[in-house]
Length: 141
Image: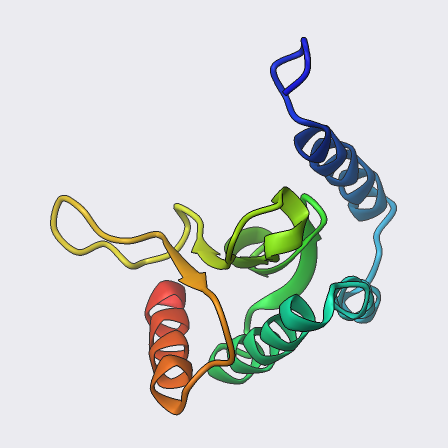
């Protein structure tokens, strides 16, 4: 942590978000955004990359209406311009696991408390993949 209260990685993510916002204002198309997401995934370390590629395939198959985009330098998937879910690789914040997260736009409400992020640590099983697809479909509503 620095004297600003943010880590180097957090400051880098904020700078990436500012760059993404400027790009969006210039009107980058859906094909451009998908290409940027795939390029960001390709830059990841092998373990994170394998998980991100699989999550990308699962999300786009389960909810083709979601548009891939970068969000704080992470692959994310948006509906009407608002991020519904995202993938955060372990290496980005030096975490011990990658994360599949859902924003407050996701329709996963279940009583007074529900999970909004899931740790991904290794190759996904068929059961994991089915659960991700189900969560994404629910999140889109």
